[in-house]
Every structure is written in C-alpha cells, then in structure tokens.
Amino acid sequence: MKIGHIELFAVDPMKSRDFYVEVLGFEEVAVQGGKFVWVKSGDVEILLRPGKNPSPALTYQQTAAAITLYCDDLPKTMKELESRGLHFKGTDGSEKCPTFTDPDGNWFQLVNPEDM
Image 1 (cartoon, rainbow, N blue to C red):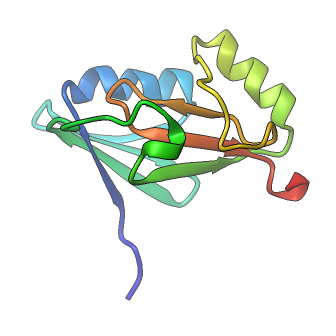
Image 2 (cartoon, rainbow, N blue to C red):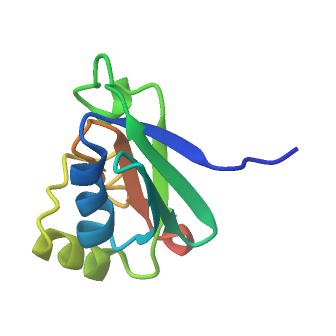
C-alpha cells in the first residue's frame, strides 16, 4: 500500500488553484468539470475539491494536519513566495520552520531538510 494523492477541500477550487499554481509554483495537472482541480509538486498530487474546512485552526500548533514543503534555500524561497503574495503566519516553534495557510485555512510548513 502507498499514498495515492492528498485531497484538500476548498470553498472555491479554482481560486485555490490560483494560489497553488501562481503563488506556490505547483504544476496544474487537470481540471475536471470546472470544479475538481489537480495540482502537483514533485511526485505528489493534490486534489482540490469542493468543500469547506469546518473550523480552520488559528495557529499551526492547533491544526489537526499540515503539509511540509521542502526547499534548498529557505531565505531565498521565503522571499520568492512573499513576492508572489504569500504571508507567513509564524513558525512551528523554530525560525527554521515558517508556516502559512492556503485560502481555505489548510496549514503548511516550509523547511530546508538539510538545515534542521
């Protein structure tokens, strides 16, 4: 058994698509029926599907789940993402692990795995 893909619920999957593609730099794989959006980062595919996160956590430490993104140069990647409109919302407790959310309140952490 292995993980096939990750499904994230989005109030407006097309708006979320813009965030994942234009801000995070993910690749758009497909749009099904104008409402199911597939994006990809590396070998991992995410399906953005219609739905709502019932109660998004206010902080990274309060969330039930999060996705960690790896990069080679944390300061450079942070500056690139901020230039595309991303707003970091704190850390997981270490300055080497900045956190942020997507438009639907799903939490992410950005790290350089070589610098942990």
